[in-house]
Image (cartoon, rainbow, N blue to C red):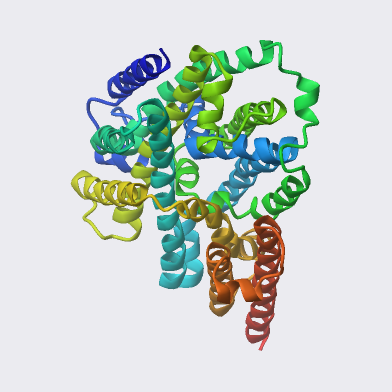
Length: 458
């Protein structure tokens, strides 16, 4: 019964998404999100779009997996990343106060082509990771439902997402995000209420659960999240793109509402992982197999539909941001809807290829993006918040330290890298890497700032 419910629900989701996509779109709507009448998106369109593009399938799975292994500490650690809506809203507000229309615009004014290219490289990798990370979850779900169908499911979902994204760009993503988020809230709400009403569930036990491996590493991850939460939103083009499509007041409120809604959703989904741990269920198929054995068919179906909704909603938003990146920033295609569609196709094909490659280390590529973004913390804090000069060499040192740090974490199991890292769990190593990246970045930025000030005074 569960496969039928899930496939039927997913078919309804696809149909509703296609119906919600605009029938006519302009170039301004394709890249900037305006409707056919030229109007900017309203508050709740922006809020629901922000939320649904950030609680993507891999995020929901990560929250649940961390809850299973590290209890409430693990869930809180992942939820802390959603403080990015608060820091991201702050950064967008400051950028707009300077007259900048994007992060690239501000970096370009300060550091020229080097600022744009280095930033665009990081966010291109971020967008690519969003595509394959969500398709991986789609594959896991269908592999559990219908063994052997995962490859075809990945291909089908990639084609569907590309089809309506390529038709309407950002305007289509915003409209379909609303439908998909409302559907997510209904479907996930059913599953969550069922969990709360389950005789085996105890809220007090869940909120104090240590997880299968104890809570210590969850608290380590919480500190890592605190170190990354300022820079993390600034390297996410999906969030940043939505920071410049409406008026300042609407934008500010959208970030505030998106914060509490998304944080509650992630916290609630994490409880499903905690419950699996409390019940002593075996860890199977990234928890998908675990839940299939734990819950009745309709509840399991609701959980899987929640993941599929979030996967599809993130895919279209990632592809629309990829179009803007490729056309307006990298200029690898002409500024036209055809050019944008070509870029979308490239990202969709590349992301699908990485998914089908099947290397489990690809999950780490999602995790390291937060480390790679950390060059923005000293640069934005000193240059944007404190409004002090930052030398180009300082910027490049900070960027290099962050990229090297991300690479070190990704390659930590290699003999050479393992020799320079402290002994300990990978999350403890990630904490050390983040601290070193920030120390190097801030030192370079402050040193460069003093030299720039000294030259100006002379």
